[in-house]
Structure formats: C-alpha cells, structure tokens
Length: 237
Ligand code: ADP
Ligand code: ADP
Image (tube, rainbow, N blue to C red; front, side, top):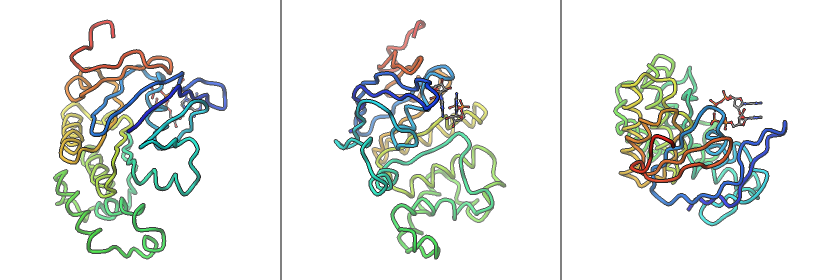
C-alpha cells in the first residue's frame, strides 16, 4: 500500500536526504525506523505525506504516485495520512477537546471549521478518541497545562479523530522520559492493532524499536541499510 520506487531526495542546498529508496510497507504493519541523527529518518517519514517532496523516483500510496499530486489531492492525502510530531504540535491555548476535534478538519471542510460547527458524529468520535488514550478527564483543560506524555496522548487522540489509514510518527517519544515513552508507544501499538492503521515510527533507540516493531528499517546516510523483523537485528546492525 506504500511503495518507494528508486526514490531519492536532494534538498535545495544539495544535501542528499534520501538515496535510492526501494521499500514496500503493507497495510496494518507497525514499522519502526532507526538510525543516527541525520540518517534520513525524518525525511523518509515526511515524504509520505509530502511535508517534503522527493526529487527522483516514485512514491506510491494505494497505487497512486503522490509525487504528482496537486493541492486538492494533497489535502486528501493528509486526511488519509495522520501525523504525530516530537513536540506534539497542539494548539497550546486551546482546550484538549478543541485540539482533538480539530482532527476532523480534513473531513468537515473549512466553512464548518471556521464556524466551529461540529456534528454530533464529530463530537462522538472525539470523545471516543479521548477515551482510547485515557485522557478524557483532561478534556476541558488547556493543552499547555498537560505534561509531555499527556500532550502526546492528546496528539494521538487528535490523529484518531481524523480516522487515518496511516499514522506517521516522527520521533514521538524523543522529548519524553523512559516510562512515559513506553506508555506512548503502547498506545500507538494498541491503536495499530485495533484499527489496523499502518503505523510508521521514527525512534532513536534500537531497544525500544525491538520491543514494539513488527519490522525494523535501519537507515544510514539516506539509505536503507537494514530491513527485517526485530528478531533479525544483530550487534552489527
Ligand atoms: P534524521 O531524521 O535521521 O535525523 P533527517 O531526515 O532530519 O535525518 O536529515 C537527513 C539529512 O538531510 C541530514 O543531513 C540533514 O541535515 C539534512 N536535512 C534535513 N532537513 C533539511 C533541510 N530542510 N534542508 C537541508 N538539509 C536538510
Ligand atoms: P531531526 O530531529 O529530524 O534531526 P533537526 O533538528 O535535524 O531535526 O532539524 C530541525 C529542522 O531543521 C527540520 O525542519 C529540518 O528539516 C531542518 N534542517 C535539518 N537540517 C538542515 C540543514 N542542514 N539545512 C536546513 N534545514 C535543516
């Protein structure tokens, strides 16, 4: 369902972000990308919802080459492909509930979102999402009053409200302490299993990758240097 075909990306300043990537990611997989800082993990993740655009090759999602998408198709793509960031990217002064229901924006269109007119269905979905990451009791608090782990759970609830087919998580636990990191990874894994959402996560730590991933992709200098199940990861990789 996601396929990189000889995909490369060169940034405007000449830095090679991705180098001839060939990869297939199947529906429902939980893939963790590991590698040192600067290896290209973030570039790989961000190319899948066109936050960055590869300069060569193809990138197919559900058999469509997203590299040739126009603005309308990109909006559709970003509804289908949800994103989670290291720094949560919540609207800090908005309530948790407002943040979570904003996940529906892609579905409801701009007029409705401007008027903040959400349907009962949107509200029900937002409530359900909050419950799934166990953060309902914080619903009326401002996002910036929550701890980092709680904010990342709100970000997961927001992405669930969007009902994506794919979730991309770019270093989702890099700002969190180990116990909180495990909690966030457990929620991501649970959602992946319950809803069969294809999930691709960047992580710094191989130990954590091995604990959660079906499949680990190792990157170095813009290239894929390892691709296999966690059980095949060895010392050298
Ligand atoms: P990682 O996520 O593994 O740390 P990145 O994908 O962020 O790696 O970066 C891969 C390479 O591309 C690095 O050399 C980085 O400095 C470079 N890079 C990332 N973003 C940009 C950018 N916007 N412009 C130029 N170079 C970039
Ligand atoms: P990461 O945590 O993914 O490694 P960085 O701290 O390297 O991110 O980069 C932060 C931001 O700066 C990103 O938006 C990235 O695209 C951009 N960036 C990274 N490296 C470069 C670079 N060499 N030139 C320009 N922008 C860069």
